[in-house]
Amino acid sequence: MSVSYLQIQRALRATIKTLEVATTDFIDLGATATSFTRAAGSFITDRFFAGMEVVTVGFCNAENNGTFEVIGVSALELRMNATLVVESDVSPFSCMLWGDAGLWTGIGYGVRRCLVGLPLRREWDNEVLTPITGRPYVEEQLVPGPVTQVTLGELNGELELTPLYVIHLSVPEGNGSAAANTYADAILRLFKAHSTMALDNGDVLRVRSDPAPYREKLNHRKPGWASVPVTIPLRMRTINS
Image (cartoon, rainbow, N blue to C red; front, top):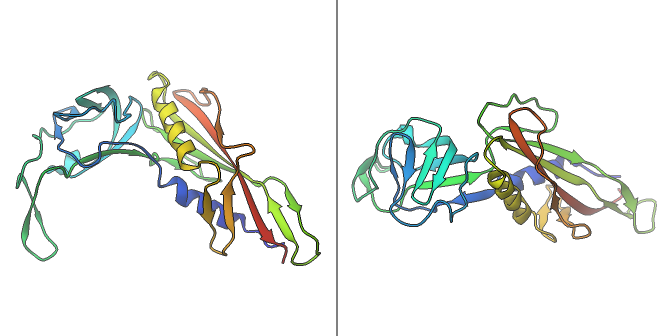
């Protein structure tokens, strides 16, 4: 048998790292001492909720670019658990950066972004993570599952694997269910039934539809956090070499 669960895990991690839960796209954004602001559109419509971790880019002040925790949301304001630098909505040449060619280049409209992706704190298999109060985190489990030979032949017969990939997404408690549910929904969209992931050896890992990926109820696995498990049933066929 020639099965590499390390390659399976690498393919799954490469996919989960591309998770996009909520985004403003690149628009005009400002900052107050405690919030990111916008003049049009809605943070609520863009699916931002208290308890999420936001990554920001494009601001003139370095203190406004980074990773922050959301503690309050309204249509035009995203309140952070941090002290920011006051900054108006971006306008032409309001920021100046040193370009690759050695020339000063101006930043124009629509170059700032707030993005919620996979939380930066990750407890991969057999790694120890100490959660930080107020910050979401994820835990990973790869369950190998049974292996069945599905075609004849002691050698070169085809094997079918049915592993499970389980992600526990934890958000700070006391913020309701919206943040956790939105993270879980995004994971289910990313690993939709029938989607595929290529392994380094050429095998193809497939997301099953019988059952399809599913999530469980919100629960409290550790004091201070609410967690929602998302299970991704998988199938892969490989040659028994």
